[in-house]
Amino acid sequence: EPEVTQTPSHQVTQMGQEVILRCVPISNHLYFYWYRQILGQKVEFLVSFYNNEISEKSEIFDDQFSVERPDGSNFTLKIRSTKLEDSAMYFCASSEGDRAHGYTFGSGTRLTVV
Amino acid sequence: AQTVTQSQPEMSVQEAETVTLSCTYDTSESDYYLFWYKQPPSRQMILVIRQEAYKQQNATENRFSVNFQKAAKSFSLKISDSQLGDAAMYFCAYRGFYNNNDMRFGAGTRLTVKP
Image (spheres, rainbow over the protein chains, first blue to last red):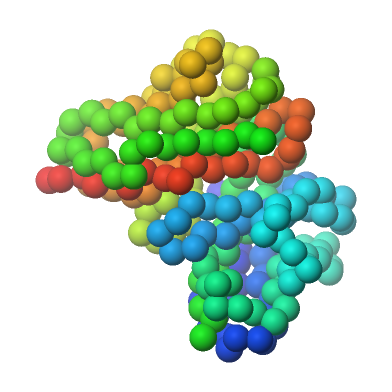
């Protein structure tokens, strides 16, 4: 079964530092997503990415965040100048593009900002 | 904007019994897709079942089935013969057909299965 791979599984960073969360989507998928889940809370949409550009982003996804697909396989989420409230589980997901399909999620990166 | 509401923060069920998790949603679209995801303690989100809004027949996957009421905008998940491994957070999700390619999630229902 193809999977979405996320690294690292857990990252601790100091407030104000930059972090890059990495994802390898399923190879034939066309749409890529980042979601976050603050502990005990709902899963929140951050951004969707298609054809090498952002197709939609939420109000959470401000100038602090950026996404990139640098090499055709990795899909990264960069958070500049992290804040304490950025501590959350970050999930990457990919889909074939057919809306009938659900997403395949990665196992998440737990980001802790101290 | 589409919203998804799960009114039951927590539910519990006895092993081998049946439980129903509720979900309602709000949308102006006529075509869309609905999903139930399971998030066990390992934290990975796993697709349980999906329903196309244009299909009247309720989706079924083994012990999991849905009761899709389009007019009422309701999409409940029924788990039959509950097993200890079913214990998890369950998220209802909506994905539009025309607008937005992203998926919107409800707040989740934590299901406990008692032996």
